[in-house]
Every structure is written in structure tokens, then in C-alpha cells.
Image 1 (cartoon, helix red, strand yellow):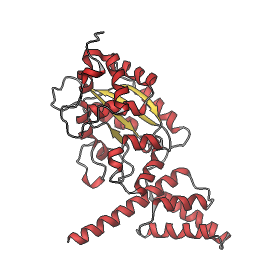
Image 2: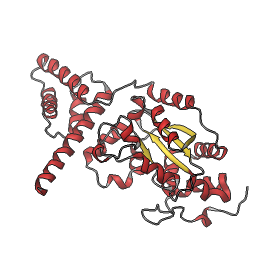
Image 3: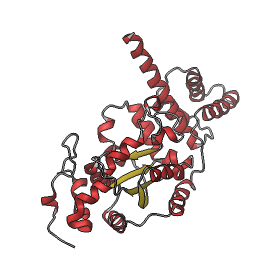
Image 4: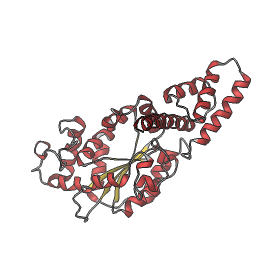
Length: 314
């Protein structure tokens, strides 16, 4: 393989400087070294043809990986490499570093609780022969759809799948080639990153059975769950009602009961306080129900804020 291209000569890989990543970023630099070692002089072309798609735990537990991959394949993308990845607290903050600036601490905490629930699946996809002005990562990001359901265009991935609210978004994509480089550096240690890049170089379509196997491994420790939030709210309310009757002097359980009643009435409750109280109450709550309640609390909070803003504007 030619060694004419090096980390020092490749420069920025995005076709625009708008929101481009910092080429001095350590994740970018480490990842680009591996990309150059695998692709050599073809690194720019390969980056334009490659996209990264993450199926997050909500997609895993609701069994939507196969349906999601079918949609991206119909759109002209071919999955060629995949691996399980754990989205830890630090990975969450590094991958979504820009978005977190605009989020409330409650939303950040709810997202962290969801992303850490079980492993996610990272899939590398290749798009060839379209002659589009957009890089593959940019086109996949357009296809992904907006995070907020009411803003989603028909035919986008999130609109076509069961993504019922702005917390359960199911998927993440690297927005452009530079972000793809950086996120590969965040998500994978060098050995695994090199293995995945060699799979991209070979460009052999990944069997659907392989992706189903990965999804099954991620789902096995936590089980299958629906993305509905009404049922977890009902179950939690029933549990705490029995507990309060048994221990009427327990202030923590009574506080949790009041928080659930507020949520049922559509009144805002701090997601972080709700989860803290839920855990302190010592009830046999399903861990996924805590995730769902956390998501519901954020959605109610944000709907109340949006309603207030709309009222002022009117």
C-alpha cells in the first residue's frame, strides 16, 4: 500500500469548514493514523463512502435493529462491519459534546441512564456509485430524521420506526466524514478500530444474522421492552400504592407517590429527583421502568416549557 499520505498531509476531510472537527483533537488524530494505515492514498474517498450508524439501547430492547438495517439498505447503504459498544458516561459526553451544551441537566441524566442500560451496536456502512454531492455520512444523517417527533419528515428512519418521543431516538449517526473519524476514535480501542476498518476495506456485505446475533447478545442481560411510558408509570404507581399502605410513615415512598401522581397529571417533575427517589424507595421496580419514567419526566418538563414559550409568543 502506498505511504504517500500521512496524518500530517491529509488535512481536514470535510468538504466544508462549517462545524468541522478540530484536526488536533486526540480522538481524531489517533483514529486518522489507523485510517491512513488501512486505506493509504484512498483514505479521502473511503471516508466519503463510509457512514457510521449506532443503534442505541432503546432500539436494542424494542427489537428494531433488523427493521432499521432494512431501511438503510433500501436507501442504498451496505453494512460491512459491526461491533458492540458500551456508551459510558464519558463516551456520552464526548460523542454528543456539542448537543449537551443546549440540554438541561435532567435531559443529560436521562440520556445517560438510557445509553448505559445495555450495549449499543455500531455499524459501518458503505455507499457507492451514487455520485452525490453529499458524503455517505451526510446523506445518512439527513435520512436519520429529527430527534423531536413533531419535526420529523415522512420517510426518515425515526419516522418509519417506533421512536415515540424525543428521548427514545433509537439511532445516532456521525454527521460528516470528520465526525466519523473522531467518533471511531472515541468508541473503539486501536485493535478493534483496525479490525473494523479492515472489514470496511474488504467491503463484504455483513449477513443479517450477524447483526441479529449482536442485538441478541446486547438484549440478553436486560430483556425485551416496549417503548411505551404509560405502562411503566402504571406499574410504578401500583407498586408504590401497596408500599405506602404497608408503611404509611415512609416519607420517601410517599414522595415518590406524589411525583408519579404529578407525572400522571402532566405536571413537570425533575427527572433526576424522580430517579433518586425511585431508587431510595426500595421498591422492586424493573430497571427499564426507571429508564422509561426518566424519559417521561423529561418529555413532560420540555412540553411544559414549550407550552409556556408558545403562550408568551402568542
